[in-house]
Structure formats: structure tokens, C-alpha cells
Length: 454
Image (cartoon, rainbow, N blue to C red; front, side, top):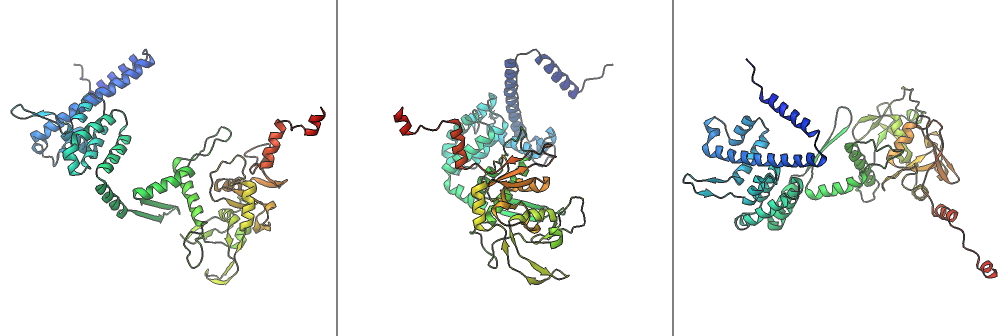
């Protein structure tokens, strides 16, 4: 006796046959078939919604002991409860049925139902329409239901569900400005932001922002989170999440450097780190593991001396003598390693970042000491260079060599980056360099006296 083929096996056979047949089709035939199948699946879904509505009218879920229609459908179809609830909600609004006496009962959303039956829109489109209409004020649903249904169904034929949801929300704002304002007030009251330090030392941030604050956040993050331009054909290796984190770090740098920030105890916001000076001053050979880490005062988390050296390139240092228990015994004066006039000159010479090929958007760069001030390096233009946060890390991590020659910084890569270690000019071009470049391409105008003599 030949065993019966399972539904799964039959489906596999059908799919394999379809793939085999499609091999000989033209590109246009493949595209057309994909579209035809989508329309067919949408029309089939509409038929299922009609049957779901009929099952609810017959009380089938209750007869089978289900607590609700969505719960019954979830078990029947093995789908998520949210999906089941969405199908039931849509089915109630697009059902086309008759009474026991054979009299037709018009659907609540005839335009949406018609578009679904044609396969022109899908279930998600219909869910957006139903949700959008439910948010309308009662007077609008009573007097403008057919008009709104027709508008949204028409737009749904031309745009994806996500865009349709934006249009539906904008329509609600137009028809119910008082209700929309109340919703915004509720969102504002529901705002929250939590942060905590995880076991590994990373800061975990969770937030829900009202739409106005969310828009501000997106407007600030998006330009700073853009992928860096390709370098030698290599794309920005950072993930979207890493780019967003870097953007937030840049925003915090900008805020910390702003005079508009509130002062605590008469001081601007600052990142406080404690570290043994000998560990900070050490050359920090990667093989040397004897150096003790520093401590981030705000979170009590340790941080390596090497990263402290990078941070200390451009900061205010407050010498403080501590006793064995870490309590202050004596406090010195702060000294800014890059005072205002030096930073202004560096920005004029280097731009935001002097690293070769850097196209970092405007932000708060770091004034890097070529010879660290911890090692006796002076705070002057010939020993300093502007670097963005990314390239500041790169210079320290990869051990790039920097020198200022003829008033312009030059970067020599390590052998791990360039075996030949060919120096690369950095900084930004000056107007004089632009003029020289043009003059090399165009001949100088003739002297008027020489022109008259000829």
C-alpha cells in the first residue's frame, strides 16, 4: 500500500515544480508571476476573513471552549495572538454577509473590502485603515466614514502600509485636533529614560520619548550617524547600532563643551577620572600589564590607562594628592592643555580633523599632543593636531606617527597599515594652496605694459 503524501511533502513538490518551470521563463514572466501570486494570496486572505467573520457569527469559538475569537483562531492556525487579533478586527469591518432572511448587510468599509477582494491591498493595509478610522472622533466616523474609507483605500493601492499609517495619522490630526493634542499630552506624561551600568561595565540606556523629543533626538543623531565615506574602496565597518552610539557620544561631547550647560558647584559638567600618575605617565607598552587602571567617578567603573591618556590629550587636569584610602590631601590648580586661542588656531589650520581623508561632520574634536604633555610635550601649535573622536582612537591604537612640517601636519602610518610607511599629508587645504593649484593650471595674466608694447 502506497503511503499517503503529507501536506508538507505535497507543498514541497509543488514548490520544486514551480522553481523547475520558472527556469525557462523570461524575466518579465517571472516578475508577472510574482505579482499574480501576491494578488492571489491577498484575495485568498480576503476569503479567509469572510469565513472568520462567519465563524464568529456562528459562535464556533465558544462551542469549542475558547475564551475569545482571537484565542481560538491563534490555536486553529498556529499564528501569533497579535496576528490573530488583527485578522479578527479586520474581518469584522470588511465582512460581506446577508441576514437570515437573505437581505444583504453592507460592510462597514466597502472601499477597503473591494480593494482586498481584488487583491490590490493586503491584510496589513486593511489593518492600518481600520486602526486609523477607529482613532477618528465619533462625529467624523458618523458623518465621514464612507469618505475616509474611500480615501484611505485609494491611497493603500499606491503606497506601502508604513507610509499609509503616516497619512492616516495626519488625517486624524486634521479631523480631530483636540484629540490629537490630548494624545500628545498623554505621550509627554508617559516619557521615561532609564540608565544603569551592566556587569561588564557598559552603560545600558532605555527610553520612551514623546514625539517632539523623539524628533529632536533623530534630527541630532542622523547626520552624525551617517556612514563614513569609503577609504580605498573599504566601506565603513561600523554597524548601524555602532554608528548611532558614536553619534550619541558626539552629541554628549558637544553638550559638555557648551557654556549653556548648567553648572554643578560652579563647574561645567566634566568626566572625572582618578588614576595613579605613574601609571598614566608610563609608555604603556602593550606587553606591559603592570599598570593599574583608573576609575570613572560617575559609574565607579575601571578604565585602562591607555584610554585615559587618549582622553587626557585635551582636558582640564586637576592634580590631587590622595591618601592611602583615596581621600584628598592636597589639590592643585587646573591647567588646560589646549586653551581657547590654541584650539582656534588648530581649527583654522586643521579643520575638525587633520587625519588624511577624514570627512567627519562638524562636532567637538580633540586637541591631540604629538608628544604627550605627560611626557614633557609642549602645548603649542607645532606639537598639536586636531583629531575627531574616531581618528583620535585610531592614532593611539595603531601608533601612527605625526609631525608638523612647514606648518602642516603629516601622518606616517604603522607597518600594519602600510608596509612602506609612506607619510601622508593631513590638515585642510588653505586658500593659498587653492590659489597655487589654480595658478599651476592657468597661465598668469600678461602685464598690461608688456601687452601694449606688443
